[in-house]
Image (cartoon, rainbow over the protein chains, first blue to last red):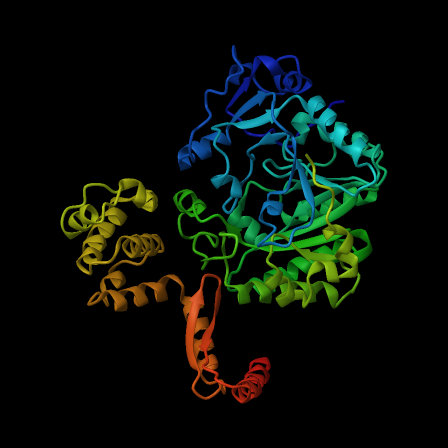
Length: 376
Length: 157
């Protein structure tokens, strides 16, 4: 099937490892990009892996250089939030990593303190990932596992290159109690809209007001493009979710976030959207150096007033976060009490400050936060 | 990275065993003007003899403020470390400083139990008061609870 690109992701060099040479993704890349930027490697050894954190220049360069390779480790893991269960209230999310790095450029991106490879990677052995997932899904088919592919790479911004959505959706159709979440800031959905879904694939968008998108989410789709793509997915029977995350404080935040809530409600009713999660700006303390160097101090993110919090991340003052969450809750709930909204990676104190309850006490959220079997 | 700064800063750096990697934040100072400003400010700060940790915190704050286009305003209130620290914090965290001032005033005006020692503090992302009491009998506790209930009512208003 041939999918036309509005704009091909802008890689200036593409390397193909020997183990990926015969993959479908490699064939597709060869058909889409000019030959002179494609290098067929002799070895699978990643010569670009860094020991420590990358420099700002290396991080910038890593967005332009693509490596097709195979992944030898475990594809399927718990969301990192679950490793901080003592400090945070987490929602049983699992992640399936089919690549790393992102071709967009958000100032707050946590990959800046996470990645140590000087290239964007796409793992071409998706069949191995699906085998791994099958062994888990067969074992726990009756448990409602939620699996996302957007932890260390955007789920859909490179999907027109990989077409992984076309393998994942049919796979998850076999396990109706499991759900698959594509989390993105792009508007690329046409490549999978012809597929049947049993209703357990969630197309989800990280959303912010255009004021924030223009200043902090460089190279991403506009709010309107994201909402239009979401509408297309809804019309084809996919579930929807929105992540208003990270909410970023600025002097006009109430006006801009209230407009965001209006826009979402203009396109969708509460019944159309499975879940809305909210989170406020947060990052690991060591990330501030990379952000300062890459984006200066004019950014709303680098110049934000952030403080160490439980769990060690830097966050806004707790009362500011609570005010932002309460405000957004009101923007949705005053129109319909049916909007299903929860907080992402927040402390029990903030839950109580915003919702007056912890999630397990909220009937419509109980199933999301109920503990699942531990994976080995 | 800003290197080879002559003067008080060099001495402070050597005395406190500050490594170049501790000054990673200075990588963001890209222009000669920004680097020169940092050199001058680092000497001013070193003259105030901060500890290793506080010195690095204040130098990072100074770096942020330079990148936020503060220039000569960073050379005032340098007479002592406490005053300079407070001044820099006010510049770098204006909203929080204002919020804390309002909260401090509100908390200290509360009808705390007689004899309670009330100290306003910011602990990371939370601001509040540490309150210390001394009790020697059940009656003291009864009085304490009654007083705290009055505080609770006022806080809720």
